[in-house]
Image (cartoon, rainbow, N blue to C red; front, side, top):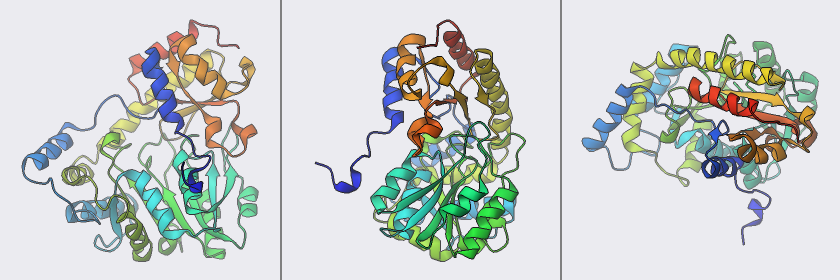
Length: 384
């Protein structure tokens, strides 16, 4: 029997849908991982580390070379100055960074404001922390931040804002004006902002602005990211948290009892990626923009209204006109009916009605695979 803190937290939807894809031989446009690896020289650096003794525990905070590379990355791209010895911690992917940040900063009963729909680990970790979530819904089809809803979500019990931009699953990139509204509330109510920026380099014409760069925000913002998405190494699970020392130390205090340390032979390779393969994410984003257009145009051609994302590698379609009870019912039927797997967006919402008829597709796949998925969808009647 599981502990009460786990009640209602079932297996992740990605496990269910990926298992369906494997069982049915479907094209998997569900789980967001690319079907090609990142730069070969980064892989070679990992092999070198494996073969030359970097196989024992790394420091819990991360190896100095990687922490320094993360600090240089933040300075180079955003002008953010960090002390790599006090203001950076390496984590086992951004998912652990999220877990450690919430465990380190949130007490039972604290309220956390977050954008809905949300990455599914947010809900699980907030429940484990005993926190109360206060979602602010990005509503289809535009998925923009409603500033009135944002202000209404903040109460005297609010402790933290958990932000995600570029936003998974909607693909929204928050504007400078939207971020300023969040910043104004954070300063007014003395809130900490934890910002998940794993898709920071994967934007398509929209500017990614780290909220830490806005006036008054550096001292209250913990920034999370990873090598997984922007360098196509999702399986490496190497991420980081950066920001003021008192917030980073809270992450480290929790992380030391989770994994303690992360992927020792991968850390020198991630440092190499940040310093010597810094042009890769821009090339990847340009390639993904073409795949995004291929998928979105194809889905619209099939009669599925689809929002063109500004970032990430996910697109969302409205499927209500097909007659299914909801997106989950459709997604469970698609593998057998069409040989394609997608993700029902409703699992990312508290407000079931806001996401009931939305389906998320991943376009971080080879164009031929996207085309095959579209052909399979076109060959069947998608109506219930």
